[in-house]
Image 1: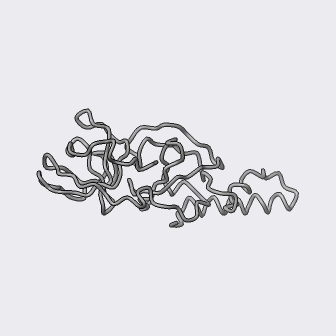
Image 2 (image 1 turned 60 degrees about the horizontal axis):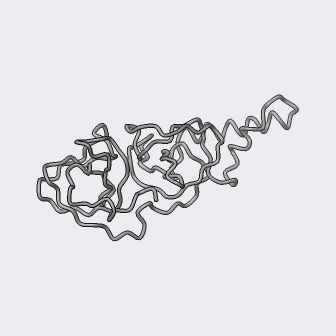
Length: 191
C-alpha cells in the first residue's frame, strides 16, 4: 500500500506516545495500539464508510481512529491522496479509502476470479474514476460500444439507477446506460 502523509503522521504520533509512556509521561496508550500494524487492519483516523468506492456518494456509517476493520476486498474508485484503492468491508458495511487504513496487508481484488459480463451501452456515456458524476471522466464510450463489466456497486443515482459498474480496466460506468446488464448476473463488488 502507498505510504501517505497521514500514515506517516500516525506512525510518528504512535512513536511519540510510546516515548512519553516509557519516560513516565502522560501520553495515552491508544496511539500505540493504532501504530501496531500487526493487529490487523485499523482506521488511521475517524473516517466515513461510504455506500460505494467514492467520496462523492452517501455515507453509511463512521469509524473512529483505531477501530478494527474487517476488509473483504479492494477495488479502484475515487482517488484520495493520489491513491484509487478502496476497501469493501465484510457484510456490505461500506467502503473506506485505503489511505485511511493501516495494517491491511495484501487484499484480494473485489472482482477476483470474475470473467466479466459483456454489455452494450445504450447511449454515449462518460467513463469515470468512481461511481459518481463528480468523479473524473476519463473518456466517453459511444452508443453501441461493447464493454466488459466485472462487478457492480451502489453509487450516485442517475435516471433512477443507483447501480454503477466497474469495467475491465478499472473505471466505472453508470448502470443507467447499460440496460442489458441484469443485476442478478453481476456480482457485487463488495461481496
